[in-house]
Image 1 (cartoon, rainbow, N blue to C red):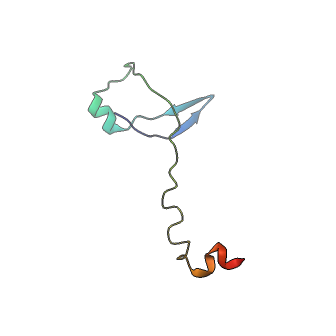
Image 2 (cartoon, helix red, strand yellow):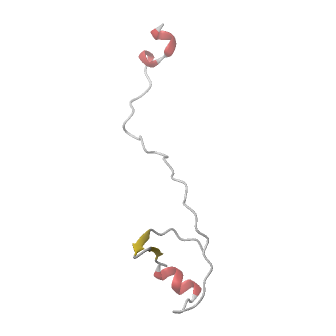
Image 3 (cartoon, one colour):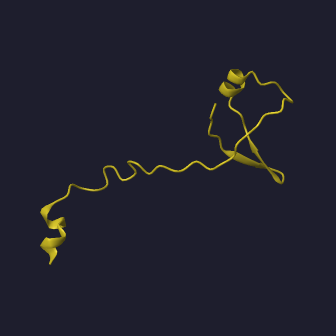
Length: 66
């Protein structure tokens, strides 16, 4: 199971909470040992500019500016 969580600073350490859905699915109990893979997810900027850029017009053509 893969989950994405935010980390929080606690003292000199960082803490990541395991969501209750994952706890239930994996039947985790307090003080059990688990294996974690830690990496930053890649950000997707798909659709970030949606609605902010108008339609392409003839005035936008490079050859019309020469």
